Image 1: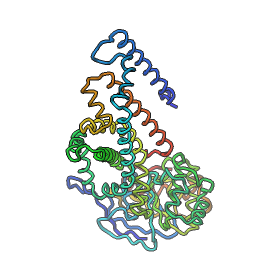
Image 2: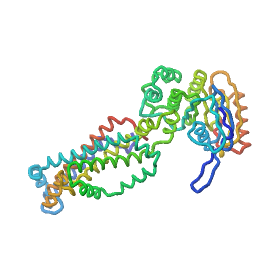
Image 3: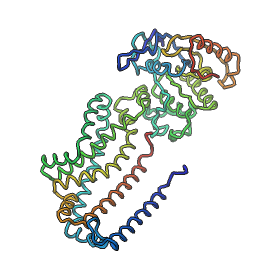
Image 4: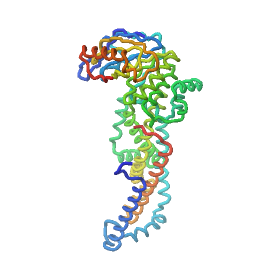
Length: 256
Length: 243
């Protein structure tokens, strides 16, 4: 281990200390010094806001809906990338201009896509699910394409020279190179997809945490907003660690 | 196999044209280890890729007979490091008996379940070589595979390679810029001057016994070194790794 390298335990220890300091400052500042302000609610109010969040805002149902949409989207998106891996490789190697053209889609702001979906499908559950799947697929597709470029030519030349058919080269050589990067991307996507779905739900107002956020904005309920933010952050943090754990269990190699 | 007057040109984006290979002709015999000795970046890799059918030519002819299957092993590791030795082999040919035979021949027995990432350059080369043999290759093209390997490793590889050539009746064509590698491994050496790859002078020698680094102190090695150095000096070519 290098001198400046920190272990996972040290990182967790530092994070725990950081959160403790943050909470301490928050409690001191907003409970004792500035109990009435327009920046953050005082801690006691924050604690009290969890009960109305569950009872009045129907937090658990809305959270379950958003959670299902996010993770159904991620699972389906991953599964679709796995199924279309040979096609993506074929397009990349045989029709590079198509790949470049598809790359243009990443410049379309997500909020516009969400508005389009709302107008096309009038905010149904299935529209939200489709939006989630397409968003995840598109993010994974861009990760896939950018990683294919890093596959060293020698692997492909050797495989071709051995007489491997293209299909086998795509599935056994390219896919295995790209796979660790796909798992790394899933961790980033986990953060981004929450944002996308919240934006979609806020616009479409079909249900979920996005709709709940809309209500919070309408009531100007700062305590509920902070409570929801904390809950979502914790969910993203925990699920990211679960993804990381699975990635470590099933991806034992590195493409670099 | 015969290479007759082959020409390869590379065209730049602005219409520039560079000759990489300039009317080269030479023959490769069956059951032999041959080496192309030329400086770095002189077009050796391009030549090997052309012979393997991975690149086109701009002129000349290649007669592949009697070889039926040609495999090119690149300089960079090209096996699949997420698979074990056995899994890499199974990807090419599932015939267990043949796999076992090649594992024994290359001295890889006991390492079947090992992954290759942490292994030496020599071990990684032997696995790539084993994959080439499993694919039924009768001419293996090897592109500077021993760069960075120790003398001991090179001697072991040399032993395995030469035994394989003898037992499986295959031929090998190595491309290197290292004089001692060329001398240690080969039955015949083609001296070529670089960029563009040009002029072929063949030199051959029959050394008895096992190929070891002590042979570099022999008379044959001395005369080979002098001949090679004279060739490259006369052709104003540098960039070779001497004994």
